[in-house]
Length: 449
Image 1 (tube, helix red, strand yellow):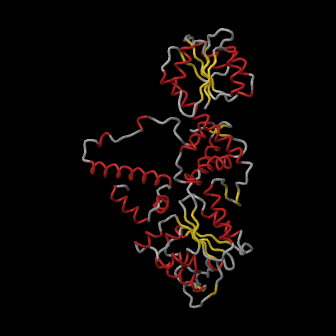
Image 2: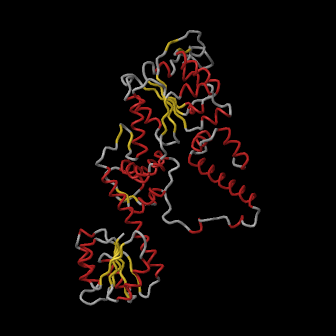
């Protein structure tokens, strides 16, 4: 971070330089407008504090010359003057100044302006890095990313695709587990056959066996015609079983038999049918804990986990956030600096799915070519009132206060996720990484209807 202080008074330059000097900053000085222009063109500072009233060449003259110089378009200039004239301030802004500082000024305010400028410079460097990355190979089929975790995943997918072993894909909701499954299929020797995908959590428990293994006509009420089931539809190809952790325990037993023997029996039939299917399963659940809770069969777990792939959450591959956002926003729109800051600051609990939804929504609702922070659904400013809210607990014993704070957090988080999932408890539990029954029990404890 290069900071140029332009003032004809030695004492004023010394005081400001002393206040701003810090690790990672280079302080430059100029005693008049001519020296300032030379320093700006040679040293290319990021921030200039420019005094208006100087001999040789005043600040307004410097602003006018810089205004027509495209090489310093990103330069941030803060005008410093003893004159509080509104007209003069407006004229400075019109000529390219970004802010106005009146003497005598508060040094803490100067430091604050400098920190803001540092943030802008950081964002510009990140955008520049993104533009450089755009020229590098960052696509892997339908997957997009240049971060080290994604590069590792690409290599793992290549190796796993050459194998015939079943694959278990693990990752949080919204990370793109089905995209990884499709890349595995497309790069395997089964790519000429079908890949069939089924979300086991989205099927009613009473119908899941029929969906997987098929049924004969009359097998149950409403079975007025036979059904193949997804295993037979994927014969010779790949079957993707999403959210395998939500599968009922009784169905797990039948699935294990099919995986072990490569034969199945449709519901209501005594006939055994041979199938040749590579199974790729996925979950965001903690299967090891589910095994401990007797909610998932350990033998099925080891059968599915021939090869395990773990998709990194978006918060651990932050180099890819702007890359993905640019992909979703298209070529006709661009992000403002405050929108870029919001994208990089957010923790993305919903991962790539949340990022895509926010960007597409912003594109649909924005009335200009520039997407800003509010278009993305983020608050334009962070309210100080929204900071620590622990004061009301300080009079309580620590253990009691701790319990109440945890309950408040749980209640807020569950309400938020239920709103995001339109009240769908199964989907909310999946997003929170919980079993449906555990979420229902927690809601009952917290008095959430």
